Image 1 (cartoon, rainbow, N blue to C red):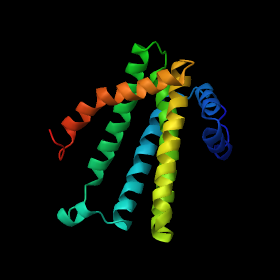
Image 2: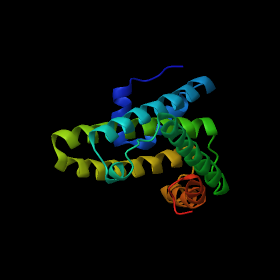
Image 3: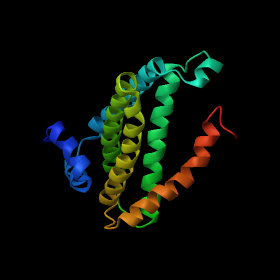
Image 4: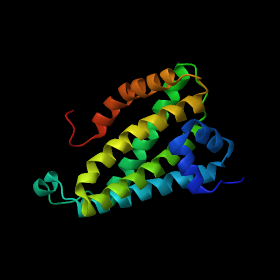
Length: 188
């Protein structure tokens, strides 16, 4: 297994996500490496969320002074990621794709690391240049959708970004009731 340098892979992912996806999929990481990366990104997301909660107070924090516990944040983050990967995998297969769980999970882990880095940049900008934070948020959302489309297209070998977009929409429809059911403060 030959892991490419991460800096150039970040740039490649931002500029040509389809090519980055092909490169990541050819790594053929072992099961242990994929799951270790999964848990690492979950912990990294938890740390960033905790730092965000400490630096940027929310109106909810005033209503409920008790912060969410670390185990709850970890479970919610892991569950959300696994649910989205499972939905992307199943809906993609229904639409004729042939992604593997390991390949799709690897791509989503990489995307999650990139999103965590962007969130960290937003936390830093909220302290230093608050006006920049909203622009970073919009850029992160747009770029994440763009990268996800290409990652799904490459993982399922659709040859069509339209099918990849359909996977995102249908996966959201499938996953939303499950998320609402397990959200303690949700409307259900």
